[in-house]
Image (cartoon, rainbow, N blue to C red; front, side):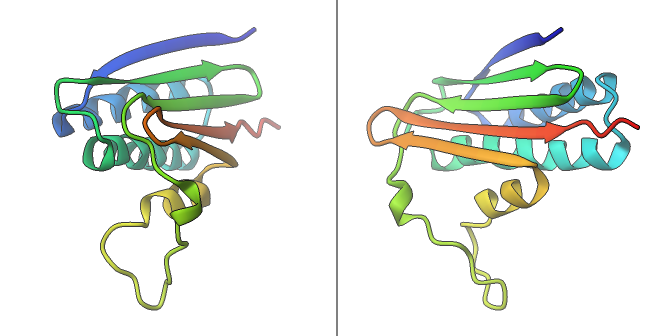
Length: 136
């Protein structure tokens, strides 16, 4: 059985924590251990912060977060329908010379089991993050 929950969030920084808390609660209820819940919280925060800080929408526009929970995994989609960017311009950060910005996608990919990013200029960006539940 799969449950899907969707949130529409104003593009304001003060709501990132609310999304983080809601998604971590869902992951906890789904049976993820504390370490996995923490990874999910950080990844969701990074994805939402990217929308709020780098999205081309104004602060009154909303973005969406959808969570699909099943017995095996949680899938989290963060969808911003404004702006978008050219993924070919993304450069992996250099760890021995980090600079501000550019680490969000790297962090998300390090914490989640699967990450897909779809972006089209003028159409927006969608980040799909998957974390598998390792039950014994």
